[in-house]
Length: 395
Image 1 (cartoon, rainbow, N blue to C red):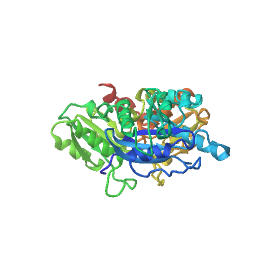
Image 2: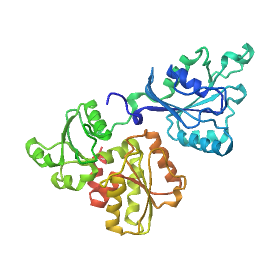
Image 3: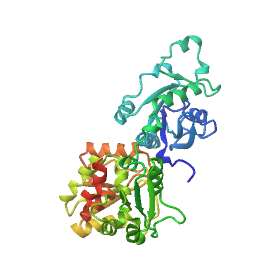
Image 4: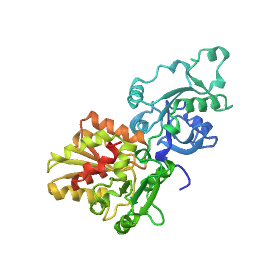
């Protein structure tokens, strides 16, 4: 992998009415034709994304959306997709070509933006068509641009860089739990779900995070773990395992050696550890007839060993019986009828940005629906959750 994953890029979502220059603005920022541009209102239907390096911000994901004033049955579906896309935003770019609309945005849109608790910037497009008198009416906090001449595009990039969090404020996956020079042993199974010729994203990102923090990373399969522990001569400072082999690894790692999993580390890195830990309490009182949503953020072809489709349901059925009712969502799809579920089990979220996971957790909290992630559920069912959380809570 030689490019920043989408989930690690700052997501810039562009919203506004139809035909106000959103797509042209995306093209101006990217300095290339990313979105289709037309004088016909409603040209952009589904969200259009462009991953790129945007100086001085670094790696970003630009997201063009359908107009918030779309009409008809299809228009309503497009607007719903736009509202869903907003949940991914690290920053919202509000676009209009009317001076009168500045500071007077659709209240439903602004309520959602405020709930996201992310920065937003107002942009006035087509400034090249304004008279000198009209230009003086533009509020100072608004960035005026011309997609035709390029005026204001550089200023917009500067404003984006000033509004967005600096890269050195990005949360760590694991490196802040250790000291420089500490050793972490990473236990990685190479079963048939493992991609041929490479590691999965959370494993790669964890290794990189350890290196960034001056720590040592020793990678082994579960088959070599016992021999590795004997050969080390001194105990590692942390053992990190794939959640699917938690039981095997816990049996081989002495109790005094800190142990956790990639998924539990990502509960903190991508989500809200305290909220997910609280969700584990619901597992104790879960009804044998419970309605459970398993939410995956990637789309892949399930196998007969799939963790979300097979292993986790079987783990819960083993304790609670076959009366449990399971539902699944994948990719960017996430149900609106969340109140109908007794529990949500979320994946680690490695394929999406942190804002997406946090937005989902906020919605679940609003409906008072308990939520856990894969690794925390598995550790709970195996009776080792307290041990698996200890390295994260001891800091």
